[in-house]
Amino acid sequence: MNNLLAKYVDRAAFDELAQRYIRATGTPEPLASAAVYAVVDGGKRLRPALCYMGAAFAGAKRESADFCAAAIEFIHCYSLVHDDLPSMDNDALRRGKPTVHVKFGEGMAVLCGDFLLNLAYEILTSGITDAKTCKAARIIAECAGGAGMVGGQCLDIRGGTPEDEAALREAYAKKTSALFQGALLSGAAVGGAGDEELAALKEYAYLLGIAFQIEDDILDVTSTAEVLGKDIDSDARNDKTTYVTLFGLDGARAKLHADCVGAKQALAKYGDRAADLVKLVDLLESRAY
Image 1 (cartoon, rainbow, N blue to C red):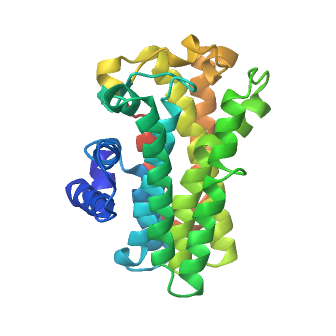
Image 2: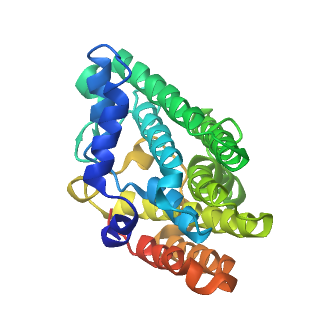
């Protein structure tokens, strides 16, 4: 999977870009260092890659989607910082190193997430030059907000657990699929993709996000902290309903495969234009971390 993602995102160059964005704000210490720690040297860079894949699908130049790719990754990283907090999942390990609140303190971790989210919108608004880039920025904002990722986090912590698959899919769609959609559709919007193309990409990203989260459910009980780079058995510790608790490991794997098939079918009519997106589905289905 790393080879495919590297085709779209140079991780070293992205890390350098992220640091420049953070340091250029003049943010005081230790907040600036906490933000660099949260963003740099870690993660798959899957969401920026999806952004660039969307641009490529629509025939746009890579650099035209730079502002969307940077913003979406900052939003993703802020969400991880907050997700790890003691008041949420209370995780001590992320990307193979101590979480931000463990390293810098809980208060600084809250501010770190706030800062990264605001920086993302600074980047987004600075990238708006015409109707297409304005549409791309709006897509990301909507997918990251109350109807998207933040709403998914609300469902995750508001109390109680989903009792059936439909409720669990709703939570996963908001919590994970929404940012996948924001990344992929914003890149495509920059390239001027039409409504039919955006609808197909939206369905693909929805199913890809559900599949990604099901795989996370599976890895949480089958992998190790050393491989994943984060705490395992987190779902059981927090008494969360998952695809594994609902269907068992074999059932969860069957559901995972069905969503992967659906994601590929959503883009089948686009042939070679969607080849890398289809390949990504297969790689995510078999990922080890």
